[in-house]
Image (cartoon, rainbow, N blue to C red; front, side, top):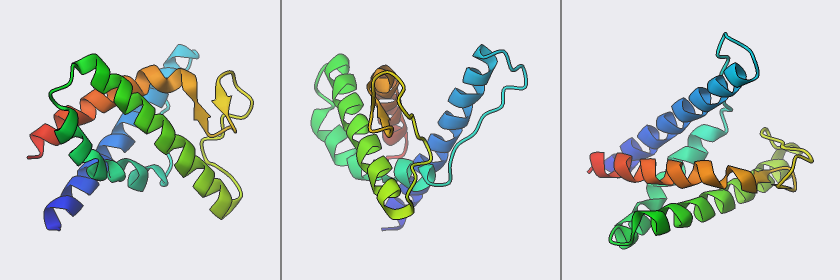
Length: 132
């Protein structure tokens, strides 16, 4: 139990760090040299829930990397959609509201982010292996 809580915390912190880095680099691409990055408190438990995906990683680790990446992209997109809709249901708003952007579904998930989630999933596999 303590080990699972520890890994939950590590995944949550890693997710926060990744989001701040991603949004900071995005601000640079928009011309802001301050590299302003951000995330939401909601994201800590959402990324922390990666601990519950560890058994899936153990089951698919023998599968080619690109199949695993596609698998992770699908799982993470589904998680983004479900958690976004759940937060919206609870609070009336989703913090990462994508509005009517291209490839957005109900404003809570962007299909075009699938490529990022592909690599995030593979990165979290390495993190999982390092926590064993």
